Amino acid sequence: MHHHQPLRVFLFLLAALGLAIPWYFNTVYFLGGGSVMPDVFWRDAFANALTTGITCDVYLAAVAFSAWVAADRRLGAWRWACIAACFGIGLAFVMPLYLAQRLRRDADPSGG
Image (cartoon, rainbow, N blue to C red; front, side, top):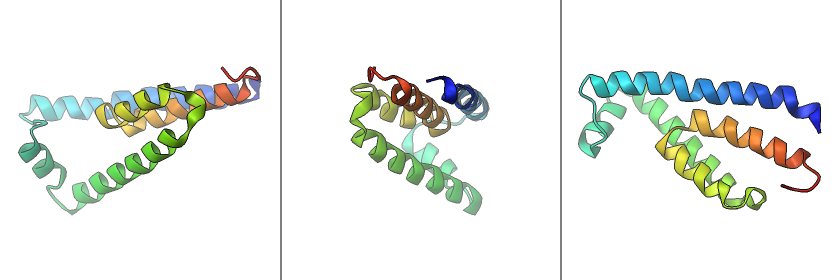
């Protein structure tokens, strides 16, 4: 059961970084006049070839991750919170958190 503990700690660290680093830049964006209004947000997300590539990469990965999580019945209703958080908070936060939770569930012989 404990052989995944170092990996889980690493994944929790990545989740913390995946929350702190992107949201630092999100805060800078919003304080600088950015908005979640679709006309402003999508204009800024696709401002140039680099941001377009990054935006497409992240959203395609988020859709693939969400499809996987939706099909994963082992986490029960918790999986729907992961999908909502993926798009509401960020993939870089939710994916390592989900993987750490899966490792814990997989290591628990009682399944819970």
